[in-house]
Length: 610
Image 1 (cartoon, rainbow, N blue to C red):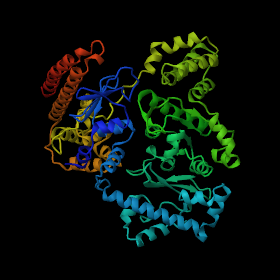
Image 2: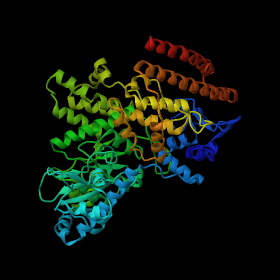
Image 3: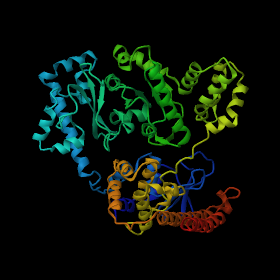
């Protein structure tokens, strides 16, 4: 029995679900209004005998106790497993990090302590004076673990070698680099050092600011498996609780974030890079639906703001994400990000140090992102000709459509008409044109990582594991995996690994994909990935491996359909009054889908191997 199975075996799904959703008995099962979408008639069912749940309404998905907690509390696999393991008294083995990662973590922590001691020493006097001039007090400097790297380029390396680390380990950790002379030297020299922690508090790298005017002004740790600035938000580890309660304010620099926290605004984080990434937006939306950006408003800053807005609005448009509200209940993310219009030439830390109340007013008066987007498009476009106005409409159309049909969208359309000086009906007609509609077409949403049945009798599922081995070893099979969905996998380790494999995206080779998959923070997934990669596999030529994947996908899909049919049968038998018109045909339709599935896949395999 794996540790995941051990945790699930100690859970009762009725008890787990009823802590979050009021259940009503219905024969051998329980029912309720689905907590994941709005409905008047209960379509959410819990099956004690199968220890599973399923929404037969808009969600059209289901799973077990672990997958329910993941979705209801908006947790990642590792977070949910740790929470439930603690609840059930199961001790999780510490096998998640590879020895290399553990060594890097320890080197980072020893490096951080060395930098802090250097700042506190005599050679840190001018750096301490600089921090004081920037308005940071001693408590803030200590809380954010700010340090100083010596300027000689050798002190840190020599210190860490005396601590027992090898030069190879230091190079792997990214704290030294090879110079033109072929010798390793300290990467950071004479710079103010900002330790960078991920959302869980792990020290993954450093940001360094020049104190003598040398370029680059800011220098980061090298990009790698542990330090990926596209996935990190500075100070999020400290801001999580306040972000859940108050929403998030996003600033541009370390100093901005530290100044905000020092002044009591603890829901502030700093982006890593010139614009937000999809990974960063995903991380924030798991905590809150309220996002406010305070970024530079010069030409470069406005361009970066627009790029960030496009990422946020596309994220809201294409993903259904719920976050955990202050009371612990799942809440839908509201697609209404806002922009703080900063005073000309002033950064957030300047405003905060001068007057915290002025900063609070700026946050409160932030304008809707769609307003900022429309005004920017107008200012940068041509409003003197019909063609220019049409181009502006086409440019902002995706952002307007991301708001959904409601008051926000109606207000945006009205504002756009006012800015362009045309009747509102003209704007509506332009937004409805086929060329504009194609530009705003909804991207197919990736399937959620929900499970179907939790009951695999074995500690391993050979079919699922063989499927993952094919995908991991042969990246070119991604196209053939289009019909494969996370819910086809029974075992959580396999389902989560497949979901993360989907997120890596196309175009990567085998090594790059595996390196990304190894950055997860859940011990079970890392260990499971290593196990799959270590298994020997018979070499297959192109046509055989494609046929093998299609065959295994067909088997997983058919199993999923049969389990869905079984749960549909229980619901139909026990609560027919709740079924809407036409739902009595669902089982017949499932029978037909099972029958069609085998024929379709057989034809595809014959075509490939012909």
